[in-house]
Length: 393
Image (cartoon, rainbow, N blue to C red; front, side, top):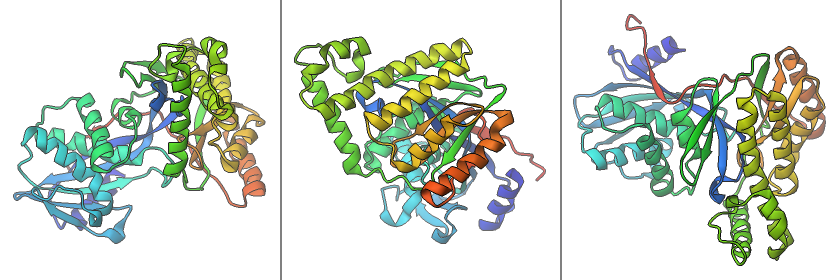
């Protein structure tokens, strides 16, 4: 892979210079869905699929960017004085945003760059390809120009780029998971305080399988905003009796005691998911610390059922995969991952059953949906970093 990317870099930019190589992973969220904007916990892990960026410094203040994933866009060019958002620059606005915000803080980016990007994260899968691009760019800028940022600084800048530069009102989980990933570990993140704990994800005889529905995520802003408003309304009702700032501030026991305060049946269901899901994330940490992978799998199943029945964000494709997975030999847990309405599911499968699992799920999915899913078996990876290339290439 590295040799191929290096050859492509030299060809595209007509150079003999040896580039430096950086990589940022994608991420899966193992459990803790739609809890982030309700002040709760999430439980992501970085994966071995991600974004590569090969880069050399230039002698002027010009930037040239090229994506092997979008060759029809060609080389996108701009100068250090042209870092504002530009609709014509398409995907390159993600790295441009990182450049603008890091330059504003330091004024230390004093040269242009040639950068080749390549990502092997499946399109439309909801595995954080945008955060991966942001974090690989932030990491390479930090290293090339000896900027003063630590990982958490770059994570915050990435979120700021999403929220302010690109206008996407997302939380911090994606950038955090991509930046702070640890090999063979998931991380329990409190989205309110940014306190976090690593949990050992020692699967040994099991694989984490990502199953792409091949239905592009169609989570419209209206559907997403509706869920948020329903949660906000439920919180407002609960605040008439409880001194809380977020839905995730209360336990399931407290919710059961006060749930009738929520006047809407639908809002009550939304709140139930958030509060029970938040509790599942904390229990997941305990189970993994005790290497109890089967109980962890049960929590994953419960999460999907809650997302299906109480939060109603799964849809036929994701339900078909999860429900079929539960019936397969060697499966200890399966659920949707990401925002829902398409995208991906994950399953934890005994390695000896992985091939049969994929065959059976493909057959069932074809019968129900009429096209095939795609399977990926990632390793649990570390966060954004430089990859040392063989300088002899």
